[in-house]
Length: 431
Image (cartoon, rainbow, N blue to C red; front, top):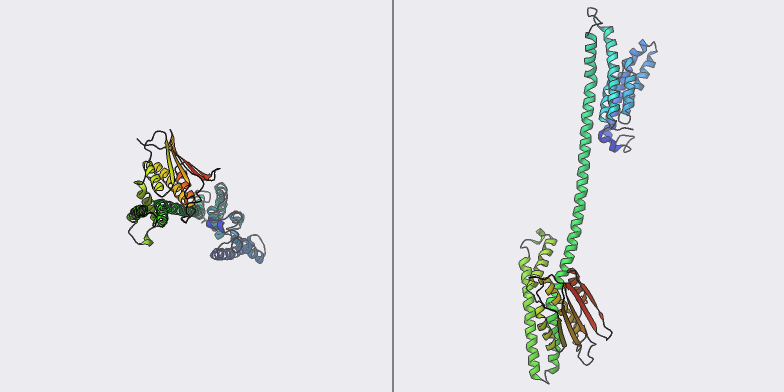
Protein backbone atom coordinates (compact mmCIF):
# COMPACT_ATOMS: atom_id res chain seq x y z
CA UNK A 1 0.00 0.00 0.00
CA UNK A 2 1.30 3.44 -0.92
CA UNK A 3 0.05 6.88 -0.08
CA UNK A 4 0.78 10.35 -1.30
CA UNK A 5 2.37 13.06 0.84
CA UNK A 6 0.61 14.09 3.99
CA UNK A 7 -2.28 11.76 3.22
CA UNK A 8 -0.28 8.78 4.47
CA UNK A 9 -0.78 10.04 8.01
CA UNK A 10 -4.51 9.91 7.42
CA UNK A 11 -4.69 6.31 6.12
CA UNK A 12 -7.49 4.53 7.92
CA UNK A 13 -8.95 7.84 9.07
CA UNK A 14 -12.18 9.14 7.68
CA UNK A 15 -13.86 7.52 4.67
CA UNK A 16 -11.84 4.61 3.29
CA UNK A 17 -8.30 5.89 2.60
CA UNK A 18 -9.18 9.59 2.49
CA UNK A 19 -8.29 11.55 5.55
CA UNK A 20 -10.12 14.71 4.50
CA UNK A 21 -13.42 15.25 2.76
CA UNK A 22 -12.00 17.56 0.13
CA UNK A 23 -9.50 14.84 -0.89
CA UNK A 24 -12.36 12.41 -1.47
CA UNK A 25 -14.33 15.03 -3.41
CA UNK A 26 -11.29 15.80 -5.60
CA UNK A 27 -10.62 12.14 -6.39
CA UNK A 28 -14.27 11.38 -7.11
CA UNK A 29 -14.43 14.39 -9.42
CA UNK A 30 -11.26 13.36 -11.27
CA UNK A 31 -12.55 9.79 -11.56
CA UNK A 32 -15.86 11.01 -13.04
CA UNK A 33 -14.08 13.21 -15.60
CA UNK A 34 -11.68 10.39 -16.45
CA UNK A 35 -14.57 7.90 -16.80
CA UNK A 36 -16.46 10.26 -19.13
CA UNK A 37 -13.32 10.81 -21.19
CA UNK A 38 -12.62 7.08 -21.48
CA UNK A 39 -16.29 6.39 -22.28
CA UNK A 40 -16.13 8.84 -25.21
CA UNK A 41 -12.83 7.34 -26.35
CA UNK A 42 -14.38 3.88 -25.94
CA UNK A 43 -16.69 4.56 -28.86
CA UNK A 44 -13.70 4.81 -31.21
CA UNK A 45 -12.07 1.81 -29.57
CA UNK A 46 -15.26 -0.25 -30.15
CA UNK A 47 -15.29 0.70 -33.83
CA UNK A 48 -11.65 -0.28 -34.30
CA UNK A 49 -12.02 -3.51 -32.35
CA UNK A 50 -15.32 -4.41 -34.02
CA UNK A 51 -17.12 -4.43 -30.69
CA UNK A 52 -20.57 -3.15 -29.81
CA UNK A 53 -20.52 0.50 -28.86
CA UNK A 54 -22.10 -0.08 -25.42
CA UNK A 55 -19.29 -2.51 -24.64
CA UNK A 56 -16.68 0.09 -25.55
CA UNK A 57 -18.45 2.75 -23.49
CA UNK A 58 -18.78 0.44 -20.47
CA UNK A 59 -15.11 -0.53 -20.81
CA UNK A 60 -14.14 3.14 -20.90
CA UNK A 61 -16.21 3.91 -17.80
CA UNK A 62 -14.58 1.11 -15.82
CA UNK A 63 -11.07 2.03 -16.97
CA UNK A 64 -11.53 5.74 -16.26
CA UNK A 65 -12.98 5.04 -12.79
CA UNK A 66 -9.63 3.49 -11.80
CA UNK A 67 -8.44 7.02 -11.04
CA UNK A 68 -10.54 6.82 -7.87
CA UNK A 69 -7.82 4.74 -6.17
CA UNK A 70 -4.85 6.87 -7.16
CA UNK A 71 -3.94 7.73 -3.56
CA UNK A 72 -4.14 4.14 -2.33
CA UNK A 73 -2.69 2.28 -5.34
CA UNK A 74 -0.88 4.73 -7.67
CA UNK A 75 1.09 1.86 -9.26
CA UNK A 76 -2.16 0.17 -10.34
CA UNK A 77 -3.45 3.39 -11.89
CA UNK A 78 -0.24 3.84 -13.93
CA UNK A 79 -0.30 0.20 -15.06
CA UNK A 80 -3.93 0.57 -16.20
CA UNK A 81 -3.04 3.73 -18.14
CA UNK A 82 -0.14 1.86 -19.82
CA UNK A 83 -2.39 -1.07 -20.63
CA UNK A 84 -5.06 1.06 -22.34
CA UNK A 85 -2.58 3.28 -24.15
CA UNK A 86 -2.87 1.20 -27.38
CA UNK A 87 -6.66 1.81 -27.26
CA UNK A 88 -5.91 5.55 -27.27
CA UNK A 89 -7.82 6.26 -24.07
CA UNK A 90 -6.95 7.36 -20.53
CA UNK A 91 -5.22 10.67 -21.32
CA UNK A 92 -6.22 12.31 -18.00
CA UNK A 93 -5.69 9.08 -16.08
CA UNK A 94 -2.11 8.81 -17.38
CA UNK A 95 -1.19 12.36 -16.38
CA UNK A 96 -2.79 12.21 -12.93
CA UNK A 97 -1.48 8.66 -12.34
CA UNK A 98 2.12 9.69 -13.07
CA UNK A 99 1.80 12.69 -10.76
CA UNK A 100 0.34 10.53 -7.96
CA UNK A 101 3.06 7.93 -8.42
CA UNK A 102 5.89 10.50 -8.30
CA UNK A 103 4.42 12.24 -5.24
CA UNK A 104 3.89 8.99 -3.30
CA UNK A 105 6.28 7.03 -1.11
CA UNK A 106 6.86 4.41 -3.80
CA UNK A 107 10.62 3.74 -4.18
CA UNK A 108 12.18 5.95 -6.82
CA UNK A 109 13.48 2.96 -8.78
CA UNK A 110 9.95 1.66 -9.32
CA UNK A 111 8.74 5.15 -10.16
CA UNK A 112 11.47 5.53 -12.81
CA UNK A 113 10.64 2.13 -14.37
CA UNK A 114 6.90 2.81 -14.53
CA UNK A 115 7.43 6.36 -15.84
CA UNK A 116 9.73 4.96 -18.55
CA UNK A 117 7.16 2.31 -19.51
CA UNK A 118 4.40 4.92 -19.69
CA UNK A 119 6.58 7.22 -21.79
CA UNK A 120 7.47 4.39 -24.17
CA UNK A 121 3.83 3.35 -24.53
CA UNK A 122 2.70 6.91 -25.25
CA UNK A 123 5.58 7.41 -27.67
CA UNK A 124 4.73 4.26 -29.66
CA UNK A 125 1.03 5.15 -29.81
CA UNK A 126 1.87 8.70 -30.87
CA UNK A 127 4.22 7.53 -33.62
CA UNK A 128 1.63 5.08 -34.97
CA UNK A 129 -1.13 7.67 -34.85
CA UNK A 130 1.00 10.32 -36.55
CA UNK A 131 2.07 7.93 -39.30
CA UNK A 132 -1.59 7.33 -40.02
CA UNK A 133 -2.61 10.97 -39.95
CA UNK A 134 0.46 12.68 -41.37
CA UNK A 135 0.12 14.56 -44.61
CA UNK A 136 1.03 12.72 -47.82
CA UNK A 137 3.69 15.27 -48.84
CA UNK A 138 5.82 14.46 -45.75
CA UNK A 139 7.95 11.35 -45.87
CA UNK A 140 6.66 9.13 -43.06
CA UNK A 141 9.96 7.30 -42.79
CA UNK A 142 11.98 10.45 -42.05
CA UNK A 143 12.88 12.16 -38.83
CA UNK A 144 9.82 14.35 -38.54
CA UNK A 145 7.36 11.84 -37.04
CA UNK A 146 9.70 10.36 -34.38
CA UNK A 147 10.97 13.78 -33.35
CA UNK A 148 7.53 15.32 -32.99
CA UNK A 149 6.23 12.18 -31.25
CA UNK A 150 9.11 12.27 -28.76
CA UNK A 151 8.58 15.96 -28.11
CA UNK A 152 4.85 15.44 -27.53
CA UNK A 153 5.43 12.40 -25.33
CA UNK A 154 7.93 14.24 -23.11
CA UNK A 155 5.64 17.25 -23.01
CA UNK A 156 2.82 15.07 -21.70
CA UNK A 157 4.73 12.82 -19.27
CA UNK A 158 7.64 14.90 -17.97
CA UNK A 159 5.66 17.75 -16.29
CA UNK A 160 3.42 15.53 -14.09
CA UNK A 161 6.40 13.40 -13.06
CA UNK A 162 8.60 16.40 -12.19
CA UNK A 163 5.76 18.22 -10.46
CA UNK A 164 4.91 15.06 -8.49
CA UNK A 165 8.53 14.67 -7.39
CA UNK A 166 8.58 18.32 -6.26
CA UNK A 167 5.31 18.02 -4.35
CA UNK A 168 6.42 14.75 -2.73
CA UNK A 169 9.76 16.26 -1.65
CA UNK A 170 8.00 19.37 -0.34
CA UNK A 171 5.52 17.31 1.65
CA UNK A 172 8.27 15.17 3.13
CA UNK A 173 10.16 18.31 4.06
CA UNK A 174 7.08 19.81 5.72
CA UNK A 175 6.44 16.58 7.61
CA UNK A 176 10.07 16.49 8.74
CA UNK A 177 9.83 20.08 9.95
CA UNK A 178 6.53 19.32 11.66
CA UNK A 179 8.01 16.29 13.40
CA UNK A 180 11.02 18.33 14.43
CA UNK A 181 8.76 21.06 15.79
CA UNK A 182 6.72 18.48 17.70
CA UNK A 183 9.92 16.98 19.08
CA UNK A 184 11.18 20.40 20.15
CA UNK A 185 7.84 21.18 21.73
CA UNK A 186 7.98 17.94 23.70
CA UNK A 187 11.54 18.67 24.78
CA UNK A 188 10.56 22.17 25.84
CA UNK A 189 7.62 20.76 27.76
CA UNK A 190 9.90 18.28 29.52
CA UNK A 191 12.41 21.02 30.29
CA UNK A 192 9.63 23.21 31.64
CA UNK A 193 8.38 20.37 33.85
CA UNK A 194 11.88 19.69 35.11
CA UNK A 195 12.48 23.38 35.72
CA UNK A 196 9.22 23.58 37.66
CA UNK A 197 10.21 20.55 39.72
CA UNK A 198 13.63 22.06 40.41
CA UNK A 199 11.98 25.35 41.32
CA UNK A 200 9.61 23.61 43.72
CA UNK A 201 12.49 21.69 45.27
CA UNK A 202 14.53 24.90 45.52
CA UNK A 203 11.63 26.75 47.15
CA UNK A 204 11.19 23.99 49.70
CA UNK A 205 14.91 23.83 50.37
CA UNK A 206 15.13 27.59 50.74
CA UNK A 207 12.16 27.71 53.11
CA UNK A 208 13.82 25.04 55.23
CA UNK A 209 17.11 26.88 55.28
CA UNK A 210 15.50 30.18 56.22
CA UNK A 211 13.49 28.50 58.99
CA UNK A 212 16.66 26.83 60.27
CA UNK A 213 18.57 30.10 60.38
CA UNK A 214 15.72 31.87 62.16
CA UNK A 215 15.41 29.02 64.65
CA UNK A 216 19.13 29.02 65.44
CA UNK A 217 19.30 32.78 65.85
CA UNK A 218 16.29 33.18 68.13
CA UNK A 219 15.50 29.89 69.86
CA UNK A 220 18.64 29.59 72.00
CA UNK A 221 18.55 33.07 73.44
CA UNK A 222 14.81 33.01 74.03
CA UNK A 223 15.17 29.66 75.80
CA UNK A 224 17.84 31.10 78.09
CA UNK A 225 15.61 34.12 78.71
CA UNK A 226 12.80 31.82 79.82
CA UNK A 227 15.18 29.90 82.09
CA UNK A 228 16.47 33.10 83.67
CA UNK A 229 12.94 34.43 84.03
CA UNK A 230 11.96 31.26 85.90
CA UNK A 231 15.03 31.62 88.16
CA UNK A 232 14.21 35.27 88.68
CA UNK A 233 10.71 34.36 89.76
CA UNK A 234 12.06 31.77 92.18
CA UNK A 235 14.65 34.00 93.91
CA UNK A 236 12.95 37.40 93.63
CA UNK A 237 11.94 37.46 97.30
CA UNK A 238 14.72 35.31 98.76
CA UNK A 239 17.78 36.85 97.08
CA UNK A 240 17.10 40.31 95.60
CA UNK A 241 20.71 40.70 94.43
CA UNK A 242 20.59 37.47 92.41
CA UNK A 243 17.22 38.50 91.05
CA UNK A 244 18.73 41.76 89.83
CA UNK A 245 21.56 39.88 88.09
CA UNK A 246 19.09 37.51 86.46
CA UNK A 247 16.94 40.39 85.32
CA UNK A 248 19.98 42.07 83.77
CA UNK A 249 20.89 38.83 82.00
CA UNK A 250 17.35 38.49 80.66
CA UNK A 251 17.50 42.02 79.33
CA UNK A 252 20.90 41.50 77.71
CA UNK A 253 19.82 38.28 76.05
CA UNK A 254 16.58 39.83 74.85
CA UNK A 255 18.48 42.72 73.31
CA UNK A 256 20.94 40.33 71.66
CA UNK A 257 18.10 38.24 70.26
CA UNK A 258 16.36 41.32 68.91
CA UNK A 259 19.61 42.60 67.41
CA UNK A 260 20.27 39.33 65.58
CA UNK A 261 16.67 39.15 64.44
CA UNK A 262 16.76 42.74 63.12
CA UNK A 263 20.02 42.03 61.27
CA UNK A 264 18.57 38.97 59.57
CA UNK A 265 15.30 40.68 58.65
CA UNK A 266 17.23 43.69 57.38
CA UNK A 267 19.34 41.55 55.09
CA UNK A 268 16.22 39.77 53.88
CA UNK A 269 14.64 43.10 53.00
CA UNK A 270 17.79 44.24 51.21
CA UNK A 271 17.88 40.99 49.23
CA UNK A 272 14.25 41.30 48.10
CA UNK A 273 13.47 42.45 44.56
CA UNK A 274 11.64 45.82 44.69
CA UNK A 275 9.02 45.15 42.01
CA UNK A 276 5.44 43.97 41.87
CA UNK A 277 5.03 40.44 43.29
CA UNK A 278 3.31 39.24 40.10
CA UNK A 279 6.42 40.09 38.09
CA UNK A 280 8.87 38.20 40.30
CA UNK A 281 9.22 34.43 40.01
CA UNK A 282 8.76 32.74 43.36
CA UNK A 283 11.96 30.79 42.85
CA UNK A 284 13.94 34.03 42.44
CA UNK A 285 12.42 35.46 45.62
CA UNK A 286 13.20 32.22 47.46
CA UNK A 287 16.82 32.26 46.27
CA UNK A 288 17.20 35.87 47.32
CA UNK A 289 15.68 35.13 50.72
CA UNK A 290 17.87 32.11 51.29
CA UNK A 291 20.98 34.01 50.22
CA UNK A 292 20.00 36.82 52.54
CA UNK A 293 19.52 34.41 55.41
CA UNK A 294 22.95 32.94 54.86
CA UNK A 295 24.47 36.38 54.43
CA UNK A 296 22.97 37.40 57.73
CA UNK A 297 24.78 34.50 59.35
CA UNK A 298 28.11 34.97 57.55
CA UNK A 299 29.47 37.11 60.36
CA UNK A 300 27.80 34.91 62.96
CA UNK A 301 29.46 33.07 65.83
CA UNK A 302 32.34 30.65 65.38
CA UNK A 303 34.13 28.05 67.45
CA UNK A 304 35.95 30.72 69.45
CA UNK A 305 32.59 31.72 70.93
CA UNK A 306 31.84 28.30 72.42
CA UNK A 307 33.23 29.31 75.81
CA UNK A 308 30.89 32.29 75.92
CA UNK A 309 28.01 30.05 74.86
CA UNK A 310 28.73 27.62 77.67
CA UNK A 311 29.04 30.50 80.12
CA UNK A 312 25.54 31.68 79.22
CA UNK A 313 24.20 28.25 80.10
CA UNK A 314 26.15 28.27 83.36
CA UNK A 315 24.59 31.61 84.26
CA UNK A 316 21.22 29.98 83.61
CA UNK A 317 22.02 27.41 86.31
CA UNK A 318 23.32 24.51 84.16
CA UNK A 319 26.55 22.73 85.03
CA UNK A 320 28.37 22.88 81.70
CA UNK A 321 31.94 21.67 81.16
CA UNK A 322 33.83 22.44 77.94
CA UNK A 323 36.60 20.02 76.91
CA UNK A 324 38.77 20.90 73.90
CA UNK A 325 41.33 18.49 72.42
CA UNK A 326 43.69 18.93 69.52
CA UNK A 327 45.29 22.03 68.09
CA UNK A 328 42.76 24.73 67.28
CA UNK A 329 42.97 26.23 63.80
CA UNK A 330 40.71 28.28 61.57
CA UNK A 331 38.12 26.50 59.43
CA UNK A 332 35.83 27.56 56.63
CA UNK A 333 33.07 29.90 57.90
CA UNK A 334 30.29 27.41 57.18
CA UNK A 335 32.10 24.68 59.14
CA UNK A 336 32.62 26.86 62.20
CA UNK A 337 29.11 28.21 62.04
CA UNK A 338 27.61 24.73 61.73
CA UNK A 339 29.69 23.39 64.63
CA UNK A 340 28.63 26.32 66.79
CA UNK A 341 24.94 25.89 65.89
CA UNK A 342 25.06 22.17 66.73
CA UNK A 343 26.42 22.88 70.21
CA UNK A 344 24.00 25.78 70.66
CA UNK A 345 20.95 23.72 69.73
CA UNK A 346 22.09 20.82 71.89
CA UNK A 347 22.41 23.14 74.92
CA UNK A 348 19.00 24.60 74.13
CA UNK A 349 17.53 21.08 74.20
CA UNK A 350 19.19 20.48 77.56
CA UNK A 351 17.44 23.55 78.99
CA UNK A 352 14.14 22.38 77.49
CA UNK A 353 14.17 18.70 78.38
CA UNK A 354 16.83 18.13 81.09
CA UNK A 355 16.77 21.05 83.49
CA UNK A 356 19.53 20.83 86.09
CA UNK A 357 21.41 18.06 84.29
CA UNK A 358 25.20 18.07 84.12
CA UNK A 359 26.47 18.73 80.60
CA UNK A 360 29.82 17.97 78.97
CA UNK A 361 30.68 19.71 75.70
CA UNK A 362 33.58 18.12 73.83
CA UNK A 363 35.34 19.70 70.84
CA UNK A 364 38.06 17.72 69.03
CA UNK A 365 40.33 19.23 66.37
CA UNK A 366 41.56 16.37 64.17
CA UNK A 367 43.70 16.20 61.06
CA UNK A 368 40.91 16.04 58.49
CA UNK A 369 37.83 16.77 60.57
CA UNK A 370 36.42 18.57 63.54
CA UNK A 371 34.14 16.71 65.94
CA UNK A 372 31.79 18.01 68.60
CA UNK A 373 29.72 16.19 71.20
CA UNK A 374 27.22 17.43 73.76
CA UNK A 375 26.25 14.89 76.41
CA UNK A 376 24.02 15.49 79.40
CA UNK A 377 23.21 13.30 82.33
CA UNK A 378 19.74 12.59 83.68
CA UNK A 379 17.58 15.54 84.57
CA UNK A 380 17.75 16.86 88.12
CA UNK A 381 14.36 16.08 89.61
CA UNK A 382 14.64 19.01 92.01
CA UNK A 383 15.04 21.52 89.19
CA UNK A 384 11.94 23.46 88.27
CA UNK A 385 10.41 22.78 84.90
CA UNK A 386 10.36 26.05 83.01
CA UNK A 387 7.84 24.72 80.49
CA UNK A 388 9.76 25.62 77.32
CA UNK A 389 7.82 24.66 74.17
CA UNK A 390 9.42 22.29 71.67
CA UNK A 391 8.79 22.33 67.95
CA UNK A 392 10.48 18.99 67.38
CA UNK A 393 12.74 20.43 64.64
CA UNK A 394 15.95 20.94 66.58
CA UNK A 395 17.55 17.56 65.85
CA UNK A 396 16.25 17.66 62.28
CA UNK A 397 17.85 21.05 61.72
CA UNK A 398 21.17 19.91 63.18
CA UNK A 399 21.21 16.82 60.98
CA UNK A 400 20.40 18.87 57.87
CA UNK A 401 23.22 21.30 58.59
CA UNK A 402 25.81 18.59 59.14
CA UNK A 403 24.79 16.40 56.20
CA UNK A 404 24.75 19.45 53.91
CA UNK A 405 28.50 19.83 54.54
CA UNK A 406 29.17 16.12 54.03
CA UNK A 407 29.46 15.33 57.73
CA UNK A 408 28.01 12.68 60.04
CA UNK A 409 25.40 13.32 62.73
CA UNK A 410 24.34 10.91 65.49
CA UNK A 411 22.00 11.50 68.42
CA UNK A 412 20.26 9.35 70.98
CA UNK A 413 19.83 8.49 74.66
CA UNK A 414 22.72 7.22 76.78
CA UNK A 415 22.81 4.21 79.10
CA UNK A 416 22.99 6.56 82.09
CA UNK A 417 19.60 8.08 81.25
CA UNK A 418 20.87 11.21 79.52
CA UNK A 419 21.15 12.23 75.93
CA UNK A 420 24.07 12.58 73.53
CA UNK A 421 24.46 14.61 70.33
CA UNK A 422 27.55 13.98 68.18
CA UNK A 423 28.64 15.48 64.87
CA UNK A 424 31.74 15.18 62.69
CA UNK A 425 32.47 17.72 59.97
CA UNK A 426 35.17 17.76 57.26
CA UNK A 427 37.74 20.43 58.07
CA UNK A 428 37.73 22.61 54.90
CA UNK A 429 40.41 24.56 56.74
CA UNK A 430 41.60 27.94 55.51
CA UNK A 431 45.00 29.56 55.68
